[in-house]
Image 1 (spheres, rainbow, N blue to C red):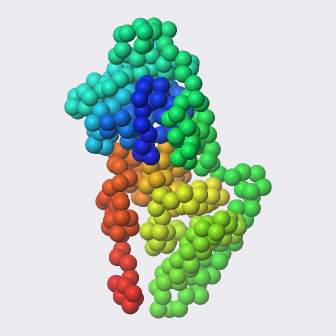
Image 2: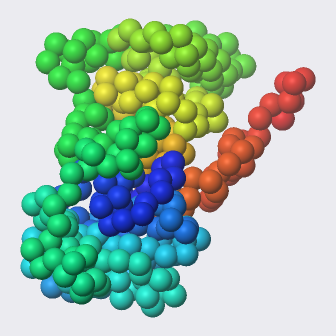
Image 3: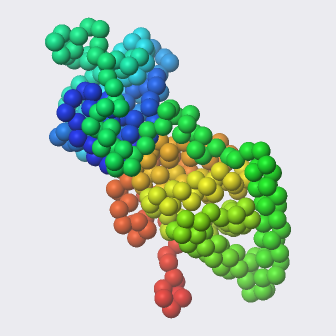
Length: 347
């Protein structure tokens, strides 16, 4: 399931809402059911799930309704994408579940082959039996979303491709760079003074320097080379380095761009930290769909990675990114992070 909070868009008609949904999700949905949360005429949140294969969509419906309720919404509209045989039971179940939570259902829509139908409107002048054609490219909502910098990819597969690993010669180069970085790491630990148990201080110092340099380069619009990416990913297997990078990551465009690039070029054995950091940055930016695909890749490679599991739980429960306003002063739910050093270097 994908939960997404994006810049607010005002809607005045079903066609406006249908035009807005791809920009809320980040891609054009197919075979999906989407619950859109509204406060007045403002869309504040959207949650999407694949149409269920079973004839009993009740569990999915209750989950979607709970997520929408958690956003403090006043009302919701449900939109199903696909053929009526699968869409109708899913939309009905979500509408019932929303009603059970006390939320007002403004409309229930089906979108199929470029037309939309309302399940609640029975006026033929407004909602004819053959449905209404719509063209999102001429909608003012689409224009507003594009102006705000929002993007709607053709489908979810295009979003998955954004976090896919590089291939061909680039993959071979990344693999060789990671091998060099691992040798460099071993030398760093071996050369650490005896007072530095297992080289922990040396590792953190090198990691802090690598994270700062990566973020400086990103701010200047420069891309890390393969050895720099490999060194950063190897160092971030050390949790204090990962946590330092995490504290310096929020929902800024440059954070998303940096960790997307690092994740794509990371070798599988060192991809967990950049994958989780990309998911965190995307979630903080309200890009729930991007966070979800980053987590799918991360947990597919490292099923027990705790930060990825925590973020996956937050997305599934629809926890609003606003809960972390003030990050990193505000801690993540369920996470105890080490206190920062004072200016005099003491804990």
